Length: 200
Image 1 (cartoon, one colour):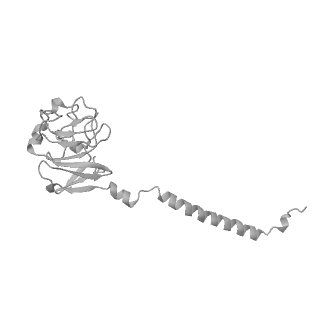
Image 2: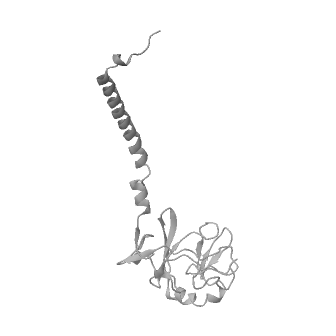
Image 3: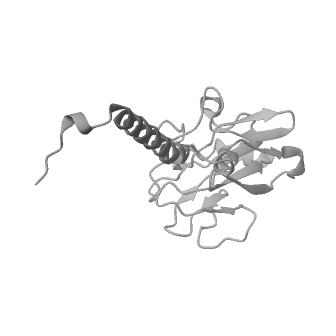
């Protein structure tokens, strides 16, 4: 049986092996860490999907509504007519939260119209009950299951929640709060939906 004699160990070889092993370990560590850390940041596609969305409001006829996608959810931009705006003040007694005190909207939309401009309404088109997409039900349609006194607004087909033309929920509905007004701003004749807008 033989024993290792310390005098037979070459210190230069040992130092070379230790340094070489350390360098290889460091290179492998960096090679593994760089893609791992890089995966924690959003991709360019994800950044683009969350970026501001612009739409020209002069393309929307009075009384018409368009649906656009922003951050994976449908959003409405509606050009309300003077008649629709006039009806809003008459709905207060029918609404659960007419002043939108318990609802989500930016400071710029904390008013009776829930909008920066009275005619242009911007809403996140997702019911606050269970996330269904309501539909626009104008007053001009014949009387149906909504009743002859329906003032016009939005109707969620999943659980029958009703909202007025400002997205405010009627009393006694399953939806707990008004529809959300996503932060937006105007850039000339364009509405720019941008949840990161200052003051939102």
